[in-house]
View 1 (cartoon, rainbow, N blue to C red):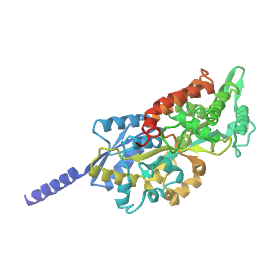
View 2 (view 1 turned 180 degrees about the vertical axis):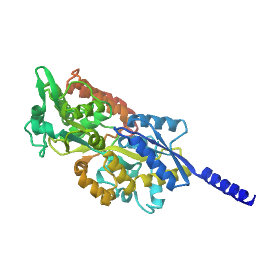
View 3 (view 1 turned 90 degrees about the vertical axis):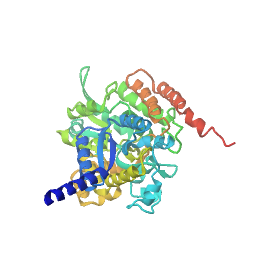
View 4 (view 1 turned 30 degrees about the vertical axis):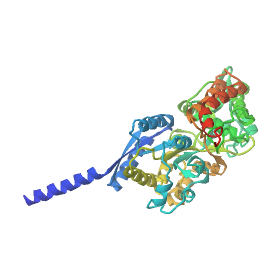
Length: 439
């Protein structure tokens, strides 16, 4: 009986401990192909096993845009998730709308970061990531996995076209010359396109913004959430390049393709090159049956690329206990060991600089030199689209580019309409800030 009593007491203590654990939900997107959801679930189970005072439920919330919508709905319903892996370009709007908490005080008082300023905390991450993590000097997002667009190309296609796969095109002129040689036709049928890239929402804006940067410009104001430059010569020039790919040089198919269609065409040899995220590296590595390489996004005037990927945020509406638990989870997920492992699994580069000091990361880069290209491109990377009403403002530009992709509008007309629509969407923020003067 005494043994039974002891067992009962022990079970009561265990049950009590389990009930005392802080419950936390993590919203996470899987915007690229592969088994990322299963890997995220494995990581969360590992975290729970090593943190018995916290129990995390991983909630897959779809694409980046879907995750944004579901997070906002949860906040408005008074059921904020404990933490969210949020597209890095949404962080500014969450700060503007007071939908995410600034992390400065948590950083200053956290066990691992005690006494650190926001700038000191961000020193652990690659410099290019800071613009999408901070707003007005305050930290709102902690970089988790990040990317830049890369040019993937088929070694066999390059050799078949008489091109040197060890020297991919670096400039727009070299790119166009190469794409003309890479495109193959049999009569009126194109059997191999020179280039393809996704034309769907979010992805399209990211790719085109990279081309605008490479053309010497910016497509939005990195320091102010109410201004975009869709009619700037650098942006119109980038869209004109895409237009000529399709309708003048005929090296890219007309219409809007999604990421699955693009990668399938690449794997089947129906496109010689594709523009896609470094976050797709592992997927391409697992599915491409012939040799391939990756290179920088070609430049017109400067090497440039927009940062992509996601940061971890803590939405408003969480109790201090849940905030503390979320911070423990965020620090664990962004530790060099976990960030490095996630990078090796996915192809995203690890945002923590220290991850690349680990022996396993050094071995990984030696075995997979394609993973180093995105790191090298970081020297030229800039922030990714961050404005008030960011989805609508970005969509205005993407609608215009999609019209160009389908032959329904000229680049000039499409970008003029996009600028008009974007300015209307930005107007409330502009009136609250730049146009509202002190009394």
